[in-house]
Length: 143
Length: 143
DNA sequence: AATCCTCATTGGAACCATTCTAATCTGTTG
DNA sequence: CAACAGATTAGAATGGTTCCAATGAGGATT
Image (cartoon, rainbow over all chains, first blue to last red; front, side):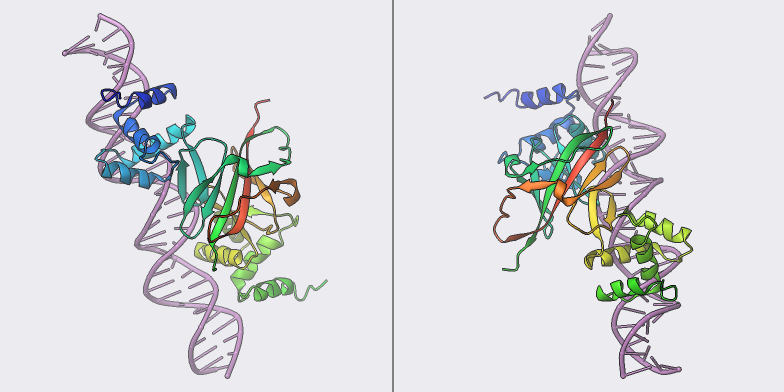
């Protein structure tokens, strides 16, 4: 019941990520990581901006983009690319993959264990695997 | 040695895809599918346009985009999305996956058999798997 | 709590890939 | 060769994202 320090956990989270806990970053972190329901989110810059505005947080789009990228670099978010022209940011940074509903544009986590790759090909010459993305693209079935 | 009908194979290919074999589509198909070296290509709209211009094919960017999408719908190409803001089109439409060099933006095929998924999760409710994309993101290793 | 420096935020312009539009042209069919 | 559907075109428009120069705010030191 730390009603007097409602942001302390987020402040800590930002600090340990090497980011100054400014008003805007704090407000965005709150929207991203403490959304009611607590579930993992797949959000675009525009969506986050709309949420912030709706929540009376005065923040520019430029700051939204800056923050999303800083959070991503700090490992607080993960960027997911499923269609050109729009980036999703995933609050779930654990090892997992995605369902992508092509019709609606919705993105859904697949628990990491449910997709197992056997035999990753060895990366060529002097390259190192940064990440493996698996996207299962879905259509609405006719029946 | 059908020097007299150098395009007949391509004409056929377009026709069976339900596309009228126009000058532009023929020229683009030639660049895409009969490139010297015969290897599979990962090309952007801008790149293809540049190639066409360099080859003295008079074609607008709008037509490049139209054709790329039509070819894709017809199953002659496959669109690969690895970074937001740019689409690659892959002339290899067989079942396979990709290495993506994040530093250079280069894309490389991985023969289909080299990546095996065990246990695809069952798609939710009334959804059907349209495709599974695996992208292995690579960095240049320091040493 | 005033100062200072660094970094963050801002609105708006700039950017770039892509799509749209309305006019013109071309393949194909009869 | 007439006529129509479909293709192509240049250029404008769009939409997401980034850039920019000016302003504002953390936070360390006094």
